[in-house]
Image (tube, rainbow over all chains, first blue to last red; front, top):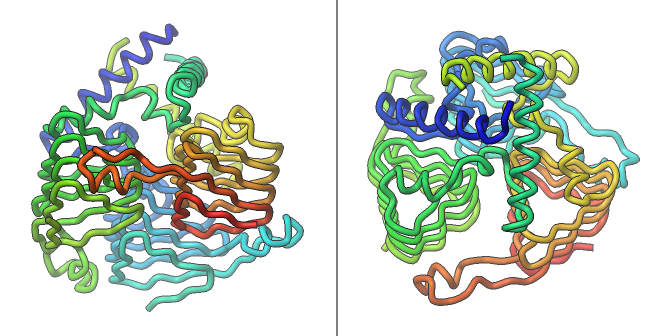
Length: 140
Length: 140
Length: 140
């Protein structure tokens, strides 16, 4: 496929999807959010009914999410040491939740292993923008 | 269209646009920033002359932006309760400005409504990286 | 190219790459991370052996990175005033490292220039999530 044809086709697709999103939902989003679906993504990850997760989010390892939970853009959910999130939570934009860290890995020049410990967020939790939750934390 | 052909075409497009951006502007950016244009996006949103907004930014509801304002990547501008930003502002990377919140929605298990209140940022404001501005804030 | 054909082709490509990534690496990532390669990106930027940088990262100007350094998603590395990072570092998700700022530019209504000063991060450094490092900082 011709490179400049592909570029033009992507720009036209973006422009039209953007206009439709603005008209219907009064919001203006990155391209990935316009062509994929955050409810479909949540469902495919096994999250419970009514939950959604923006495309610009990173999910590592085993993450369980309950019903009607909103997971914002630019979030990072690390389930490599186990992560559970309940129902009716707001996981605000930019939140990072970790169940591992690489502190000792870095400080030892790669000799020490990553450390892991599970995290649990209960029901009806509001986690504010840019909050960082470290491994081992529990909220009920 | 064949899947592996599309993948190769996207990789070639990325590689060439990336090289051009590095040569001309000495910067290396995500794919969306290489194929779309942040001045065009700002203009299409009705922002005033000379303003720009990176593609990896989220704009919700009604947001007004003045002249020569720079809006960085990974920002979130929430105008669902009304948001105005003036001229010559730097809205640094990762900044989130809200005119609503879902605190009571989450804590009530979805029974309470979202709360809204407008935000106003004046002219010549520097908003530092990862700043979070909550609903109802005003700066002059 | 037909717009709805391109949309379907992108969605199929996304879905298949996503499934493969989940099967092989147990992680679920944005589209750009699924079709491009963060080790290739690091190498093309001249970063030393074993280092990687996620696609959702912004690199400005002249940035030097040593061996086996992990650079997470949603990071911003600004080398416009000079930036050096050593070996075996963890640059966590959301970190922003600046060697310039636009504080005086904004406050003066565009009359003052950007200010620059180099930054140096040594070996074996762990830089935690969402850390912002301002121009002129040095760590050894």
